[in-house]
Image (cartoon, rainbow, N blue to C red; front, side, top):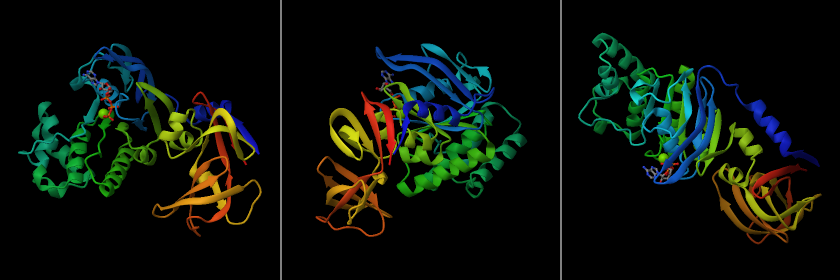
Length: 356
Ligand SMILES: Nc1ncnc2c1ncn2[C@@H]1O[C@H](COP(=O)(O)OP(=O)(O)OP(=O)(O)O)[C@@H](O)[C@H]1O
Ligand SMILES: [Mg+2]
């Protein structure tokens, strides 16, 4: 058995982090009270130039509030915001080198796709020829040139989303801000558009902050994820590190799925105690034959999950959810369940991860 301490976790996280550069986004000591309550509490965040970072957290944790302060639509009570090496804390939204895509797209229904995208450049009174050239090139980028003369009502939700993205990109911002950009799309389209966004973001190398409460979305497109809880960033790291080394039970349950068992983990079994033991379903191994370290288990439930099955395995010390492929046992089958990796939390904070 190998035991890694939470100290190792901290070092890994720092190693995974991108060094702050002159560009990108730096937020320090950000605070905001709304309606007499502290909504954002001493928030610090550094996004490297060209990085895509997600703000991920449950409803009401302060994601939109943070994004609006970065964009300049809401003034912080204290703290500083630097974009592309410049302190923008006291600049209005229109003077910041950032562009924001709102959750509801906010397209003008009576204007063509071309005119919607051209609008921010018209406001800046750019020459007509330059506007046409920039709009056409960005419409080409988001694959919508053939819809340049359509109106928003004549194109699909995913296409409307790409128009909203084009309207932000045409401004050639140093920082792209997206608030729940995919929430109005159906499941299949969400996956397609998020891949489009990631591909375009990487092609342009544009520093991007995306707000989402969908962990799957955040995991699949982000360089790093800031997991937010009640106005604070609880952990900030790469998707892999958050999954493998969550520092708290909140992060462990918010990123991926976790068996959350009350009791202390000792040598493959769970004993009564005041710790919390966390086990990922893919770290539970089920077999019909007894294997070393496994305890007797009964299959209580079998749930098809697409390319794998989820089992509920009742052992004497705990009921464990497991993900399995291949041969699927029937409900009521008797076998053995082994825990291959367990995390131990005391007062919600990771103490150690034990690997068989
Ligand atoms: N103008 C306001 N006055 C008072 N409270 C506000 C105001 N705006 C936001 N809040 C509160 O601040 C908290 C954070 O709101 P915010 O919109 O940032 O959440 P969120 O993380 O974006 O949530 P969601 O995922 O639901 O969009 C919420 O409790 C909200 O009710
Ligand atoms: Mg929000």
